[in-house]
Amino acid sequence: MRRQSRKIAASATLFSSDHLLSNESTQLNQRTVFGLNRFIFISCILVLLTLAIVEAPAFLLVSDAPVKSDAVILFLGGERGTREREARQLLKEGWAEYLIVPARNQVQKLGPDGKLIRIEWQRPTDVANQPTHERTNQRTPSPGSSSLNHGTDELTKLRNLVVEDTHQEALIARDIMERLGLRSAILTSSPYHMRRIRIIADHVFRPGAFPPFVKEGQGGFKLYTVPTRYETPNEGFWLFNSYDRKFVLTEYGKSLWFLLYTPFV
Picture (cartoon, rainbow, N blue to C red):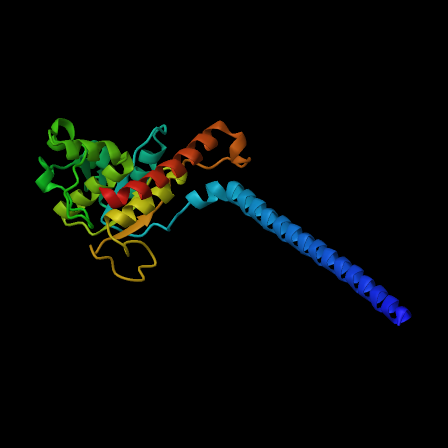
C-alpha cells in the first residue's frame, strides 16, 4: 500500500515537473515568436521609410507630353527665369495661343508676327466676381482684387492668410479662362513644383481635368502639366544638396498644408 502511494506521489511530482517545463517552453516560444514578429515589423517600417526618403523627389516629378491647348498657364517662383522661358518656348512651338500669368494678373496673346501682345480682360473687382468654391459655395478672393488688398471682413482676411500662393494663382487662372472662354491649358513651372500644382488644380478645376480623362471634368477643362526643360534635378542624393533639400521639404510641407485647410475654406 505504501509502495503504491509512493509510486503515485512520484508520478504526480514527475507530471508536475513536466507540466512546468512545458509551460516554460511554451512561454519561451511565445516570446521568441513575438520578438521575431516585432523585428520583422520594425524592419518593414524602416525599409518603407528609407524608400520614402529616397524616392521623395521622384513623387514630386509629374509630367505630361504637351498637347495643343488654348493657353499656357505660368506659375512663377524664385527661379531665374527658367519657368517663363519654358512658357514662351511652348508658345513659340505652337502648343497654345494665350499666355496666362496669374501672379501678375496678366494675359498675353500670340500675334501674327510671333510676338506676345498684352490683352485686357475683365479683372475681378470684388469678392462677388471670384470663382465659387466647390464645397462651401463661398467666393474665394484672388490676388489683385480689392477684397484681398483692402478687405474689411474678418473671415475674408483669415482666408487670405490661409490660402497659399499657388492655390490663389490657380483660382485666378480659372477665372481668366472662364472669362475668355478658354477650356484647355498647359500648366508649367519648376519640376519639383508640378505635383503640388496638379493637386491644387485638380481641386480648383474639378476632378477629371487631367489625363487620362477617365471621367469628364465637371468644369469641362482639360489640363496638362509640363515642367520647364531648363531645370533638371541634381543627380546626387537630395538630402546632401541644400537647394534640393529646401525645395523638396517645402513642397511636401505646402502640399500637406493645402490638404489640411482645403475642407475649411
